[in-house]
Length: 296
Image 1: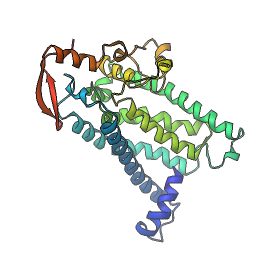
Image 2: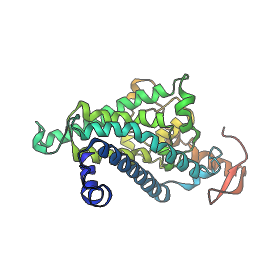
Image 3: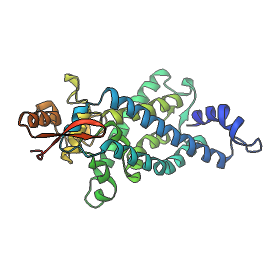
Image 4: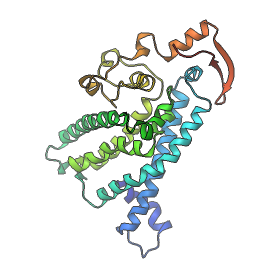
């Protein structure tokens, strides 16, 4: 994160915001700057990537599903935008520790004992490490003693849109994001690669909520895609993983996606249309057909 902070200082903060008497390496200035940069970055990534996915990938026919809520898109955005500032507070504490040099982030490829191969290995280990951690954190958040307090708000969206991707309770959002920030304190990681992975994580989080259930046939049993994660929203106790199905298989929580067996949300919508059980009404600015019966 210090790379982003340096760019912000050089182009905006030092010449236009802070007085000359306030040094760039001052702790308070860095904390304030990180809060601003983190919140702006999170909003831009969420709204920008979410909008691209919503308008160009998300199947708007899913809004006809009986579990799709009234004004759901707006409600997802409102909830996410109210949670992100709270999530940023503990996140900035970790970013601040990175900036002050307490992590194992490095600047140059030559700083890695394995060179370029080290970059590739760290990328792979980042994905597997965070996938493992998120699986267990996610499963922990489903425990009956804490589920209603922290994770239930995200399960309101049974048929999620890309904007549901960040619509978490602040505690839920921070805990599930924690492995990404812990990794560079435990393992060496190039700073540019860390930023690239941070963007990738946001893209992936949006993609598993985008309603595009297509998965290459050879990867269906390996990759935890949108079809897998939609079943998590619908059936609750399955497919907790983030990228892969590995830990769901090991933990006995894997469920083959219903959408890939002809039993998914779109299959129900088509069934209700054939049966004439969809009534036409306006939903979220789209001409939709609202089901008059419950999902079977």
